[in-house]
Length: 499
Image 1: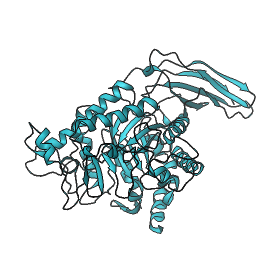
Image 2: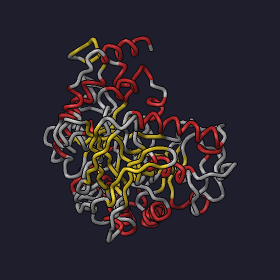
Image 3: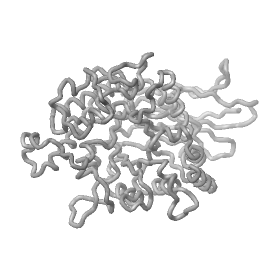
């Protein structure tokens, strides 16, 4: 811990105004909030809400604009599901509802939106039981249909080769996005199970039944996952076309070997293509996913899987959809920068990510690190890399039409203070509707430039903001724009105010 603190202090020493000049106005800044580490077990409803609030407040401090909230870890639910049992990661016992009752997903959606953040519901599609789960609820799908699953070590897995399982998983996703105002549906790196020594996937019989037309069982397995990804994409588009569908795959797509016909990186670790049967590049290049966040948790210079090598690989081959980088903050802080050993690797990694073509942001593993300010990382990010707010990257392949301008922008006195107020613009469809607003502020003599993120006062879902009135002697220009669900930005409305 002492080593980490020293490296962070060294990193803080070079903070300068250069950050304000390089911060992009649009950048994905996500963070994962997981349930599988048991961080909420034994907590009351009030205690869990307090802990989650502390996480969200810390993420807001560093201008995170999207939260990946894990709501389905093993065919269970951290929300009120008509199909699957309450998660043991929430209450300690699978199938037991929280008491006092609350719906964590509904609560998280409301809390994120209040802070100007997106909320993406994070699910695991195939995993039905983890190794430490010893009792399944009678509501669990394995109890209802054990023939649809296979065992792999201590795991239970939905068989990816069965159409009824694809239909079932699509039904779960349909239910989530139909009933909750989530901004995204997110999946992590668990597709076919990670290989275990001496353990064989027991699907030879299903391959004989359903694998006609495939020359190998490996190609059939990849096709099974491809079908699910495409069907999930189509399900989401049919229900709520503005909901983003994203994946966060393992960081290596394929290790390069001479004579390969598919792209590979100069790495030697496990891989998506031949181990998890996840053909991520196909999903990206066919437009079946809306964003991709490879988990690049390794460090610069790590011989088996070099962070710099992998950032370059994904940039070259996965640019058909927005590309974000999954970052392990703790791992980055534990090792010195090879080019500048007096500081840790976090600045170099973030600088590389921000300056690599086709990389539009990053996602933090994991929120507790930020909430606890491990090694001063939150202080560092808040004062440098994430100092200013950012809008989400555009997704014109879903929608490119901007909402109308806000109406009636004015400054008014209210019983509790001086407010900037406006009206929601009219809309024709849900895709056109304004859901958030960007408030910019410019002091006297400053150039009015809405492309400068340092002038963003806030991103809010409200139609008013309390102004810092202090005598009415200083002149300011306030600009308000509207954002739709895909964060297309409207034309500006301006108001001069004396504060």
